[in-house]
Length: 618
Image (tube, rainbow, N blue to C red; front, side):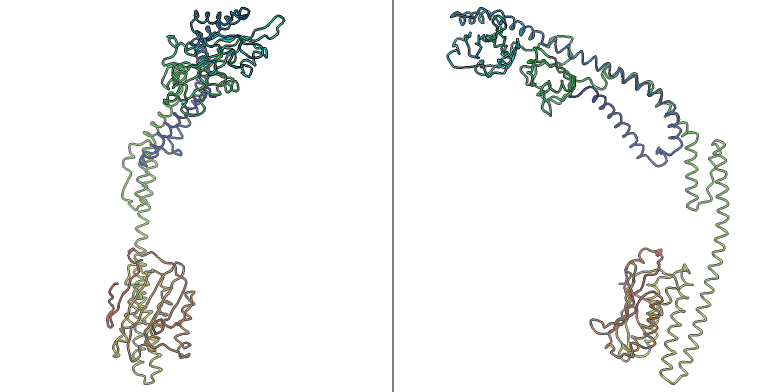
């Protein structure tokens, strides 16, 4: 059972939904026009709103009182209207009770049946009259074919049992034995002197004559009425659709629910989806009730607007004050702060030449803030110029240092080359040649640095490609051809990490040239892969392989292990699946710097032709 309170709840939900859509639209507005709950205009508006809150609360209390008063008035009006619509039915039921009480002493003897039949013929709205004995058996009746001899008993009927228990008048729906059409039984207790139960008198009234009257012009528009029994089943109605609910049990049990909620007014949606108000009242004791149904007043009806109007004036003042504060703060403060924010955003992108000239028309406080921002931009621009000059000077010095280091290493390499040519001892010549290659690798690092755009970092893939080409080209004049292929990931690293990586690669390639390609040539494969926290560098040859333990424990192998430890890794020699040897180093990936060109992050495969330093992408 519902009361008018849910109606007010629906109004509150609609208002809340409207505000939600408003804030959602504001939240989807451009950044510069969006209302921020932490912003100045919102806080000023909130302060004004809080100051006016007592007025709004007073209006809300008055509206609540008005809603409650109108709800009580509407409940009384509906109950009064329900009683009016069933006045004719109530009069007929009262008349039937009086008639039965008057007939009780006269319905005895053999003339009982004919007298009742003649009375039914003269009276309108009566289908049959019965004289019932104290045991529930019919004594006589007005029907053309009496049911006295048919063995029918009313003893088990609830209405007859209630008469036997002492009730004066009872009403119930007529069973098929009593009427072929929907009808109502009115039973009246018959007593002998001293109150001894002697039976009952019963009248069968067609439900069609109990139809409620809704022609009263004082009833609400589209009002419908119905009679129900104590269980809420509809006996007769002006329009059954108005009393068939869209969901739920319908009117069944409404009397019990009314007793529990202490209110006979409730709301529901009928079978056509119309939201209607219902009010009920007892018509005859506790057996028959009348229910009236009328469409609920809409949100804009006078029944709603009258109490809402009490709230509109303070609410309008509250909203106006809130909007005025937001508008004024927007024109005086917020728009200038937005302007200075855009200027600061330009400064954040390094455009210090922009000046907040439009702030000259702003309030004095905003002008002082713009002037401070202008001075700050000038100071930053001056400092940046100084820093750029210092950085350019430092960059030139570092490039000169790298260039001189590279030249010195090349001189050392040239001296070792001259010494190597002067020696006759082959082991000594080989040792000097290995040393010269290591020095050339270091010289290549410094050359790569001073020739690159950023002297602090180098791309390992680019460096490996040039180093492998240089090492292969240095042996190309000795008769046998060695081809090389490189499949490497891009990894921009610090030169301190590049040096042990380059020296390990020199030792691995030198080892392959000595033991795999000597006197035969072959194919050299270099693979470099970055796997997150670890990286793998492999040098594979297609030589016959080596089972000599001395080759695996020589100076070159020792240096490879030492260089791997500098990179926090391990080195090993493995047999290649198709023949040959794989020198592998697995090490911790150095802290990388993302390349300027994103394509450098893609794996590539390069082929270095002997005698050249060019490569062809895969």
